[in-house]
Amino acid sequence: MIEEPYRWVEAIANRREYIETQLATGSPIIALSCRDGILFLTFGSSRQKLFEIHDRIAMGAIGHPGDIERLRMAAIELASTEGFTRSAADVSLRRLAHYSLSPVMKTAFEQVYGPPFLARLLFAEVGEVPEEDLFLRVEYDGAIASNGGGQPTRHDFAVLSATTGSAGSMASFLEKEHRATASLSEATNIAMDAWAVGQLTVRENGAKQIPERDEITKHRDERLAQTGLELAILERNGKSAIRYRALSKDELDSLGSRYGRGI
Image 1 (tube, rainbow, N blue to C red):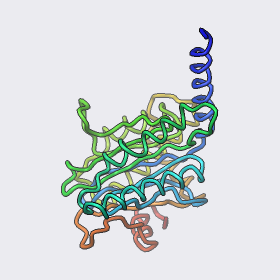
Image 2: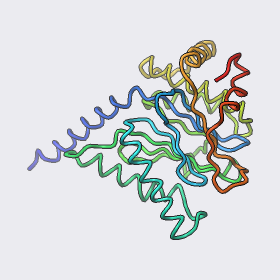
Image 3: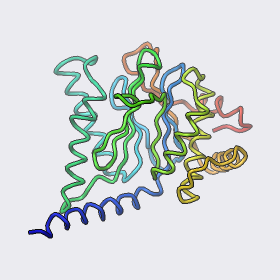
């Protein structure tokens, strides 16, 4: 009997290590407040990583495609049910995360005889002004981190990465470089640099020091030449109820022209 709690703790530790290993190659995702709304950005063209959830809510995710899809559909179903039984204005990101996704992911993680969710999720809800923007990160074990909620510092951005060290380096970079008053083009440039910081930190085994500017620019441009960008925006002042919009090829080319190439 005495050994049982220890075995459970050991199993949980092994499970956490396994999940971290599976997520180690995930491409970072950045969400930034800007004048036009909330920008989501990541690199890669193999599969979609940014998704619309409801009128003012979007999600980015890294992990196993099947698990991401299951969680995405769960989020959409809850948001649709809330919107139908109450109203679209009553659909809340906090309720979505705290009362639906987090408990499901926590239960799956702690039931050691069943499969956990191999996924990290990043949600954003656009407000009428940048100060009202909400970001929530939901971990594979159900833990939730937010840009507000009583924390000592409120950030106008959120990041998702393969490791905590990489996410910390990206956050430190954005604290210095990003402002919620940035234009869409400026926010795209900053988000691309933050992505490069995250990738370089993972490659250097979690080094906490932010890379030099030349190294950031070189790595970003190399990846731009090899793969594409996935960008979406939650528009702050859109005319329709649905604010999510994937940026078009023309818009991407326009944003990319400042780097000497199309995106």
